[in-house]
Length: 208
Image 1 (cartoon, one colour):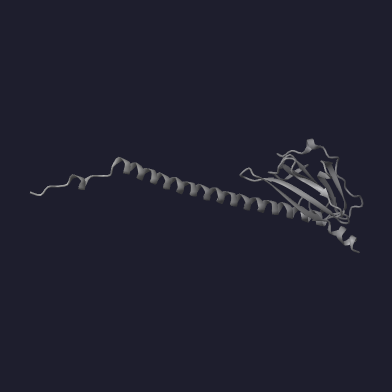
Image 2 (tube, rainbow, N blue to C red):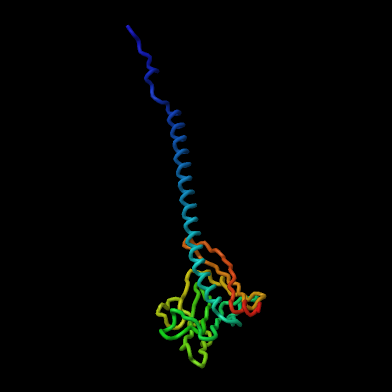
């Protein structure tokens, strides 16, 4: 008669099962951590890309305004270290065409002011052939309302800025202005950007 060895059909021991379970958990945790890290890196890259795109649009808009303006530039609301929260830009001659002005009128003055988490703007328009040059009213911070989307008074150009982190700074050359921007991304990360804007007519007169 053939005898059967009971150990030949024995399953895994408890120790073997525990070891296998621990190894499996380590693999799962490692894969999960890798996925989480990859997801975070992807979100951070997307956030940086969106922030860079927003700031590029922001800087391009301001650089164009300064390029078309005339010197001298009037600085408003001094902060510290020669930094200011606002500027008044003047466009001499016939002014410049701008979508913020009614048909038949050109923009003669523009005010830009950093306040709280926004950049505000106010323009003064007039007929192209007007003899008198329009003026902007005295700056009153109470007029700066981030909920104003009516196009009247002070208009909000950009939101999401870091309060107190943005400024205008006059450079050594009177036709150059350093603009610092503190921008809060969608992930809540504050990134600081600095760029220089120049008044074209000032550069021309400097080298004539």
